[in-house]
Length: 125
Image (cartoon, rainbow, N blue to C red; front, side, top):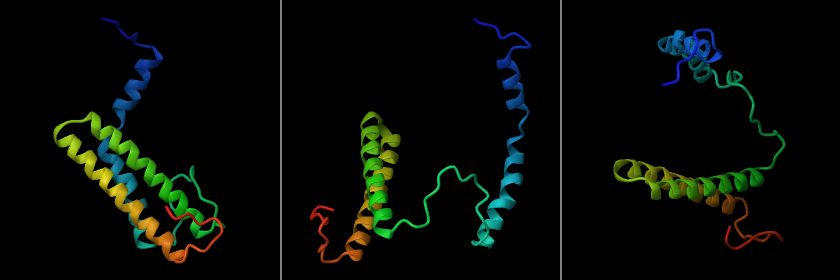
């Protein structure tokens, strides 16, 4: 069995992690989340690593959302095939939610262009 030296970087990382009081995390994050729920105009306290440019049109956003949900559907289905029992059932429920979300987004796209008359409109959207 490999022993970790007392002053090694791994042991210092472990001790830092062990010092974190997980019950305090709720005390720290709850006021931020609660403030966001009370005032939706307040900027989100979470880091803005992933952002969406404000001038993107609704149809483009919905198309990307539809493709993301379709990818989630495929990943969830693949994972469900590797699971058994109740875990498989949970994964299939997640997969069904992804399909439902994709159907909703597709209907929203249809509502934006009900006739499908645009030059780039595809019948299998």
